[in-house]
Amino acid sequence: MKKENYQRFKNAKIAIIGANGGIGSAIINKIYNLDVTNEVIEIVRTKKHSNQFEMDMLDDNSIFSCAEEIQKKYNNLDIIINATGLLHVGNYKPERTFREINYDYLNEIFKINTFSPFLISKYFSPLLNKNHTSIIAFLSARLGSISDNSLGGWYSYRSSKAALNMLIKTLSLELAYTNKNAICIGIHPGTVDTKLSSPFTEKMRNKKIFTKDEAAGYLMNIINNVDSLQNGYIIDWQEKKIDY
Image (tube, rainbow, N blue to C red):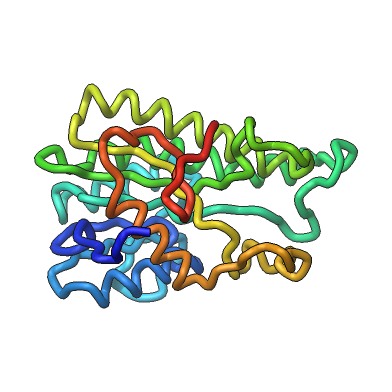
């Protein structure tokens, strides 16, 4: 693991989408402790304080308006992190068998894990700084890897993240033409102790479970150290590439 210097997060304009969530808020806390010159743009569904930007992450007009407001205030962004994700909804949990596939659960999972990042890409990618390296990162997962799937199950979650990975790859190719300094990646934090994973962590006794602060550090390391040769990659907490 490379030294945690987080140089890219210093004197930078950084947008965190999902700033009130477990991982999003942990990243923000670490950034605030780095350097007073940082400008952190917190984007949330519902404001907790006046400095946050409110955005309905499933509404085209709301995402457009939020991006426009940020552009007017900050002109461009150096780092964009989409820290949102969904694993379970109400009484619905990841499917153990195809017999448990349910349209409502499938729809909710795809809305947050796939549709929202697509819309965010549309309106936030143009805000990436063109004068030096800028990064847009999406919270992905190893479970979205088709080649790594040896256990089956979790149909909705796996598929939504696999579709997200295709977005990341495709967007990275377009950005290579429209903004040569931009890098688009997926970042996988491992299993983190958040509301997303809490119903399942008790059964994961043989698996390392990270605190939100640990996960934030790993994700910031990825973003800090990534280079243009890794554009379009899905990268795990150990800074290793996850195959599609």
